[in-house]
Image (cartoon, rainbow, N blue to C red; front, side):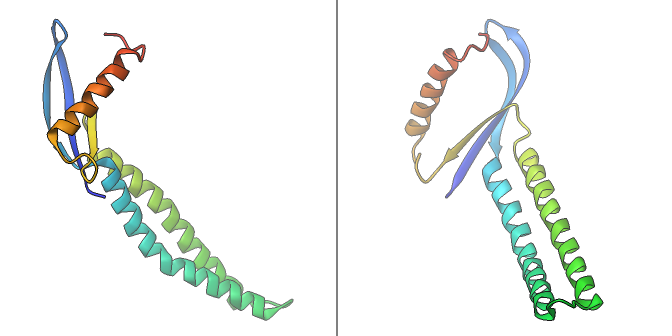
Amino acid sequence: MARIAFGCTLGQSLGGGAFNTSAGARTPALTAATDADTATGTASGALTADVAAAVAALVADGATPTEEHVTTLNTAWGLLATAIAAAKVSTAAAVVAAAPANVVLDIDAAVVTTQNGARAAMRAIEQALKGSGMAP
């Protein structure tokens, strides 16, 4: 799914509902998070296989597992747990890095293919904002 995003950093109020702002293209947060998650998931895939192999070795040992097999499982599990924690951190960091603006418009470009479509969506969002209870 192709995405395009625009961000706006809201500056000081100029009065009359106008603000000093700066806007431009951004990396869509969903794209960045998905990419980070996919990269970490790919890296941890081999670690999952290592844990499964170590568990299989322990199962094959039956009632008397060897110390070597227990140590192997402990090591494999430790590496996998670290990779899982790293995935969470990298995904969260990617989201923050991708959208540092105060307001982000993230569009699924495969569905919203024209500026007119984007404007229609923004008008609908503006109407929803009017009824949101947020101060004018």
